[in-house]
Length: 76
Image 1 (tube, rainbow, N blue to C red):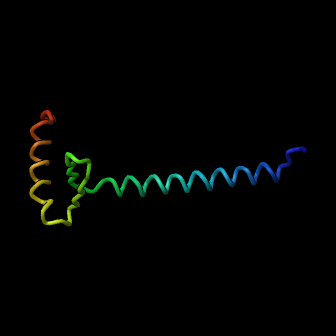
Image 2: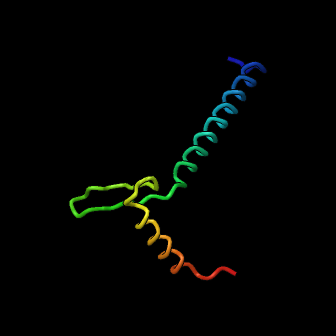
C-alpha cells in the first residue's frame, strides 16, 4: 500500500496533536508538584500528606524552609 501525501499529512497532524497534549499534561504536572506540602511517614507504612492550606502544616513547613536554607551553600 503506497504512502500518499494525504497519509503523511495526517500522520504529521497526529504527531503534532500528541506533542501538544503531552506538553500540556507535563506542564500541569509540574505546576501541581510545585506547591509546598509536608509528608509524614509512620512506622507502620502509612503516609499523611499536609498541604499549605492545613493549619498544622504551616509550622512544619517553616521548619523545613529553615533547614533547607541552612543546608544550602551561600549563593553568590
